[in-house]
Image (cartoon, rainbow, N blue to C red; front, side, top):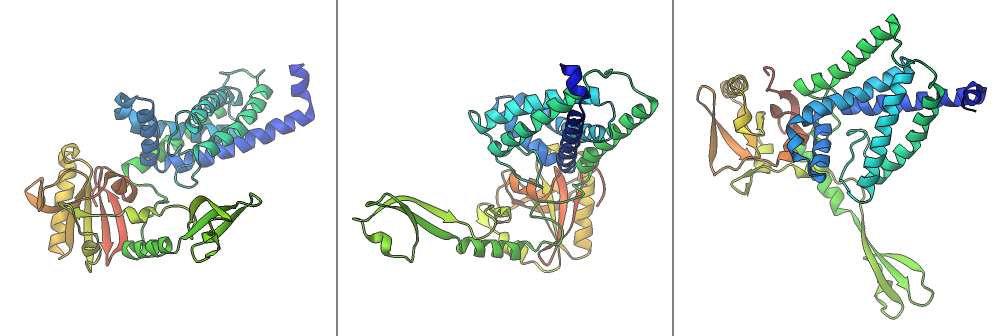
Length: 373
């Protein structure tokens, strides 16, 4: 029965379509996660916290790069028909695992963001589970089609392509970790005027419409009212059901509004963004984790900023007494301010780095942990 099914033309066409669709999905998903290993690591960390596996946190970044690279590599090998029998087994195992995981995320053990497509496309846990329910039968289809093939029989061309795809896939994540994401999909990208974007976000919030939902007590039908409509005030006719806020933008809370800099509890966001000329924002997640070579880079950059007459400050989520200064490497003192760790990770995908503002506009971002500015 199985052999006859595999030999039928319609089934061969179907398995080919399933293979290509699945491969393209994995390439798309794997690439956009691989260029942002920090974002994937944050999502993995959320899963570890949810499932009580915090002891694995030191391995999160390594696993993030490996997971994204493996997904990208798997998609490329399926698309170019390199050892489909072997890769289909990996694909089937991974899709079975993630289908179960996303089912739990959508039902009994919810998580905020599954992160299956990185920052390019946001899905809810339920949407991710449905997506996996669509992909899983595709995997089963082409896995069954290539079951008779030998698993470990590699030709020289297949071996070369396997090495190439592995190197390429792992290099994308490694490069993005050592530097910064080559494609920035977050709100704090180059060319963004933070103050102006925050002002526009506040304006959109101010125009969000409040919708009142009432039930007609006579016929039971629901009706929506705006605050300006006074008809709902008739208690004998209308019974309140819910109050809903409809956002005027795209329905996504703008993360740009989370940009907040404080000095001992005092908000200094506007004063920093109002600085004319260059402003170097040195971002340090944890002072104890800064390596000596990185301290030298930060110190050198601070001296460079002072020599050119530019403002320079250090942002950190660590507790600070006001006013606070930190000494880097050779004794260079830099004024420090507080910023939320999550906001810093959104602005700069690095443990230690710099964001250069000019008249409030992001001009350049750089990871200082591994290279000079």
